[in-house]
Image (cartoon, rainbow, N blue to C red; front, side, top):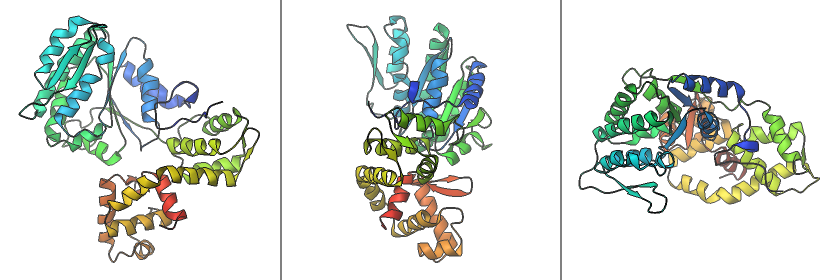
Length: 372
């Protein structure tokens, strides 16, 4: 049989581990047309949760807008319009609205066979401004009038990377306020940025959505789920070995399944999975990702690298302690803080409450085990 562990993709069906309480709360809020903001670190399963709940809502269609890596208003508008392509299908009665949108920098054409629209960004002499986003409200209202929708923005914090981020947020909030019958879900993996959007009284989105946190420990039967995947291919793994495997990658669901997948590939039916097999699986992950680790190290400053090494060895509970400063070879606590903020900005690390953690726990393990 094929490897049963799934990561780095939207997971459903047998590959999805239930989160019944969180699913129930999210479903209830969206069914009542309440806007929701989902917080959670990378690879914790937010996108799969969203598709599981919002994608299966009775009587509503999902408009899923992925904003990861957007750099301009053009990018945002293109992503939002491309998200409606699967919903419009061959409905040419929307063509007037879609063609009106084309003057905002998006070309609209129709497949001559299926009649389905295709959205492609075009390049205009003048860059689009945040005010151009007002057209989205009309589009969402038109779609919802034909059949109710739920609109999801994934990695919503990346709106902050726009040159006109404040204006873009204000325009989006203004349009969303007019659409009380449509539930919106905002998901993000950079907690501080999401808090600045939804918890700061200076933000247009201040207290505009119900907050739900997606955590690593809110699964039902997570350990049994993982054991069952191994057993489906005749592998056996003890509770202690599984606990060690999960702890190595800080319990992050996506990273746990990545390591489990590597262990699976290195074992055979009927084999007992032990510490040696977990270590071999980890080495396989290192081989596949080493160039990415080296790229990270090549882009940070010398002081940031020293702080990163100290974080890998000592953890991020107290980055201004004497032990941490000595390990990082940093003379002052302010220097340690500045270096960590730089790493956080690059998304090499993130802050979990008052604790700093690696965005990629495999990078932490590689630094420690390889003595880099």
